[in-house]
Structures are given as C-alpha cells and as structure tokens.
Image (cartoon, rainbow over all chains, first blue to last red; front, side):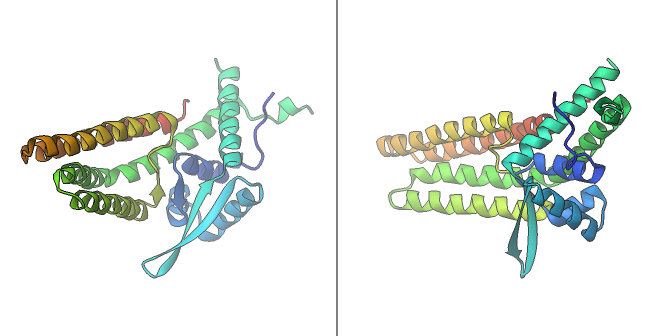
Length: 96
Length: 155
C-alpha cells in the first residue's frame, strides 16, 4: 500500500510541489508569492525538497540580476503523483 | 497506535487536495493573464515563418531562422514575465496538441516551398502564412485549455 510522503505532506511543501508539477520551471519569487510565505521560509522548504532529491534549483541572470528557478526532478514528480494518488484514495475511502 | 491511526482523515485529505487545486488555479490564472498577447505574438511569428518559405534561397532559410529565434525570445520573455516556464510538450495530453500543430505547420512550410517554386504566385506563401497564423493561434488557445484541464486535481 502506498503511503503519504512525509517530505511533501506539510502544506507549504505540498503547495510548492503542486506549482512545480504544473510547470517545467517556476521562478522563486512567483512560488513565494503563490504559496504566501517569506523568502527564508521558502528557502527552507526548497532545501528540504532539494535534499530529498525532489527539487532542482538553477540560477539565471536576467536584467542584471540573478533569478532562481525551481523545478521538480523525475523523482519529485513521481513522489508527488504518488502523494496525490494517496490523498485521493484517502478522500474517497472515508467518504464515498 | 497503528499506521492507519496516523493517516489523515478524509476531510484532511480533501483539504490538502483543495489546497493543491487552489494554488494551481491561482498560477494558471496568473499565466493566463498575458497568454493572449503571447498567442498573438506566437501566431504572428509562425505565420511569417511559413510565408517566408516563399522567398528565394537563402532568404527563406534566414527568415525561418529569424522567426525561430523570435519564438525562443518570445517564450523566454513570457516565462520571465509570469515566472513560469512551460515547454509546451508537457503535460501529456497538451503535448499532443503541440506535436499535432508542429506537424501541420511543417506540412504547410513544405507545401509553400514546393508550390511557390512551381507556381511563382505570391498569394501562395501569403495565404499559407495567414492560414498557419490562424491555426497556430487556435492551437495555442486549445493548448491552454488542455493544459489547464490537465493540471487540475480531482477532488
């Protein structure tokens, strides 16, 4: 039986993964604003996801400043899809 | 205490799924705000790329290369504006819209190259360019619809 992924499960990280799973890459500031957290909180979440091998971080210069882009790795996409499937199973099991 | 006891309730699971749905909707609305302008620029460049195949060599190659560079710059500018990069070949079903459009446009370009040389009529590349631009615009809007539908999560 599948289980919920403890790295993805906290609401902030679940939202981050939800954004990244719908795109090839998302910019740090856009993710921060969409999730509604501070730079430092997002950085901590991203570090945990990166350490788990779920998120890749890249930097690109644009207009004279560095922009940070985030993307889900193949392992991250698989883990997120499994996590969503498990949530859907739980939502359907208890309340048919 | 068992593992089952630690599982979220159905209400918790539904709440988490709703949070996922909401954040994705928010992002897709943000992306959609400037998508019309992107689609117009995109379809214009595609139309020029097709019509340019009626030019004599090497101008046709140069025009195709120029339009291809324009498309890359347009996509990069749009990604920087909205903060999201979507390649067009993901997710799965939206990919087939992009691949289908690419196939149709390739046929149009080859058709223009062949018919322009055969007939010498300027109306051939111009007409095909207009048709290609309209097709690109329609396919681009369709891609958005499929993308939005596919990135939503069932509740």
